[in-house]
Image 1 (tube, rainbow, N blue to C red):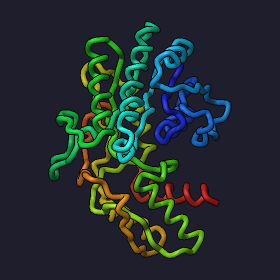
Image 2: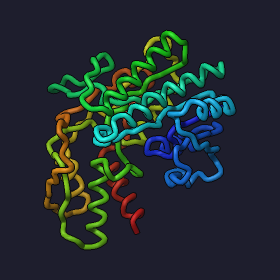
Image 3: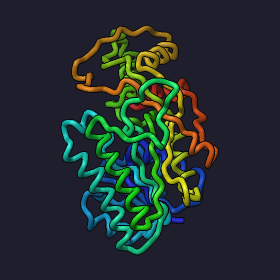
Image 4: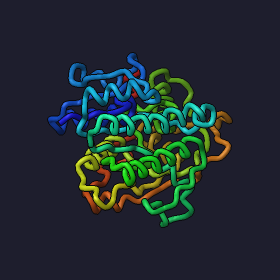
Length: 319
């Protein structure tokens, strides 16, 4: 079986590669945008056939799809950082939306029918107004930033290509996920990186933070990618849109408290204006009943273990 991962060098893409190579006999291929950014998959040297490709350009995508003719495509490539989407809105849409259309059109042009797992985001839903009312797949998207708007567009485009073009698409809507290899501009990884620096340099125990009152539904990235693989195997004649989330909510303040417990240290918090957003969703949380009932998927890694592994990643990375 031939499996292609777009964005294989990224956070989720690299963990998905880990899972596929560890749990299947698949022949693995990957799209990367920058040939120099393969650090996340260097442990698999020689096991993945890589193609350098800008997914926002149709011809390179078409050539790769035509050569590989994959049985399964995981579309994880994209611009995923919300603040950057405000600064680079057009580029965010170019990469996320045009890149997805190019992938679909390439599959059509090659006259193949791979299962395509399209990764959008729980961000499409916008604010979660009160508990226990969590976002389900039936919630109406209400994006509140350019990143979420781009992912909402991808989501609707994927539905269109499935219903009217006949592509074999399953849509995954992951909520916040974290773990080793996450870029340090995301909050859990930012905190872990700062704490690792404090521990190694014995510098003042000060953490630079933004809004610590926001609450998110966090899941370990390794549980998320296991869900992606399971979705590639599902009979999707009826349901084809699935949330992936834990249903467990943490404020950023609670995440900091877990780090304090793990390190036996108390941290002074320094709020930096540049880390504050003009509008920040106060609560984003979902339920994963659909994928749980269809496939039995549910997260298995507790948040404390995720944060432990993330901190260890930064301790080792910056030695």
